[in-house]
Length: 491
Ligand code: ADP
Image 1 (cartoon, rainbow, N blue to C red):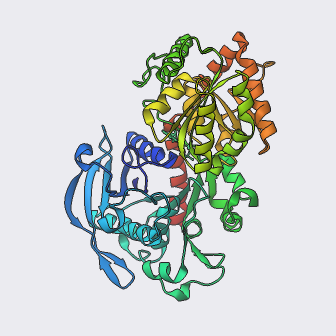
Image 2: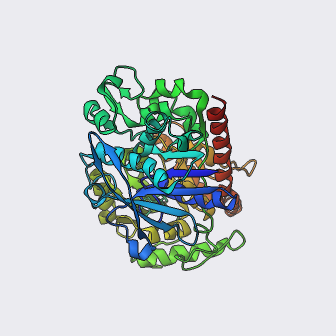
Image 3: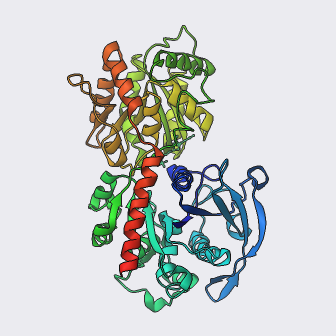
């Protein structure tokens, strides 16, 4: 299959969240299965093109936008250590900025930037003479490609047998645009915008809804989230569209790349270990605590709980703020927090560190190295999300024998099951209601179990044996693609 991946994030060039990991590993896996993927990404100013081996091509695109044309240049490179082609769309006016979506506020011209990018994806296929079987669009930023596929390019022989698939990574971000302006930029008549049309949501143009309605098939990143988003609490207002398309909506659980995330190979760890040498993990904990000035006299053997996260309301940090301090104060655990985001959470974790410098480590910022070390050192990882489409953090943690304490929602519900000391099954701790008492009780259960050697080791082994390999995920997507192709070719 010829597959186009249209995305605004891609490891290792541009990442704010899990989306970037997925768009990297899927094509790597697909290529192993004999498929032919290409990736198209904006050329952000912060991508070090020399370092990553990108070269400008002589291909200049002709992008219709409103009543004029713009002419970005295409750059080409390959995903590191592979021959998966990556094309960057160079247009400095839109993409030579410090952020992907904003810095820190959303850029006010995101409608124009992403509509332009979507059109550029279609035109890239044209100039490369690439005949896609699948156009795989990720999140709202790439969703307009699916509208273009079924409208402006509907009669284009190059796309005649192309199926469009939308993957929703996070429904909280939808792309709300002013209709007149966005319709015009995208080359549609304002007459095509009316209440109830495929573009419209609450009187605005909604890019995510547009993608949902125009896609042949829709996936999201876990089965539980696929079910949840058809209900008002989780749908962020799109439950009607998602229910209309319910028969074409499935969940495909994300996977992770165990070549990059595995404690026996992880270069960031002071002490590598595997399922049979779990006792070495403790040495990583000592090394990490030492790095932050916590020495052997500082009660280093109590459980270390980690948080690695974007600091947004989604991640359930309000529940943490409500209940975590007494656990720290009374020396039942230490906390290490890595993240950045909303000021109130930043302030809170800085406060905790200033009050308990030997008990709470706070690192504000993005630090991949430290993320690896936390997975390789902490005893628990805390993910009490209000909603979680899939979540990669718990999957990484499990592989490192770091026990997740999670809220039972979305992908967290599909990957973490409560440990039972009766049966010996289960790989973590979870709670159902978005309620800080339930969180505190789940933490309590975890901290208690930590001191029971037999159960703790069994639990850690269960965690490390959980398998969420990216190969499985990639195969599941190929099944969805076949299903999408059957639809298009039988229509
Ligand atoms: P989301 O995509 O909603 O942010 P996921 O759990 O799917 O959540 O993915 C988060 C990814 O980002 C994980 O790979 C996690 O390790 C990483 N991450 C989050 N915050 C940071 C940070 N401050 N520094 C380094 N890595 C981070």
